[in-house]
Image (cartoon, rainbow, N blue to C red; front, side, top):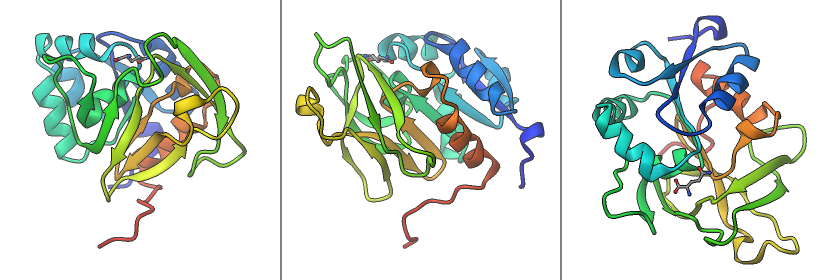
Length: 216
Ligand code: GLN
């Protein structure tokens, strides 16, 4: 199915986190963007954004609002999905340093480490080159962020933390990935006013971005 931007509706999971910022970034891309809090709202969207926030809280609310299984099913059926920070954690098949009762949506064949930059490190910023995003480096804002410890063979690594003074153990860590129609960043492109990562996601929704891995 060819999706026209103007006919496309992208939902933002609106249980907790920086929902408004994602809605605004998506609207700037020219798509219809709506908050999703209940299964009927999920049914009405073509794609979904999982915002930054607190993955343990969002996980609990996903169960309370009866969205955990419906979103898992949509992911399994190929719904384009973008998770930033806590959203990346929710999409990961495995989480290190998570809470025991934390539930995963899964669908992204990665192992992430929660609060990987160090619990005491509230935020960290750097410019990084991101594959599939043209026009120079992306300003990456990390807030109590995860990183990807390991990624499966079908996962494209889109960005790593560059070598720079102060990067410490974060240097070289994977912080943006794509697996088919699932995109995830450990940082928050919704907070910088640079719409290029959201535009990449909109292109994925429209079907204009193909996996970089050779098939097979
Ligand atoms: N540390 C948070 C968590 O575990 C993520 C923080 C964020 O989304 N900015 O979910």
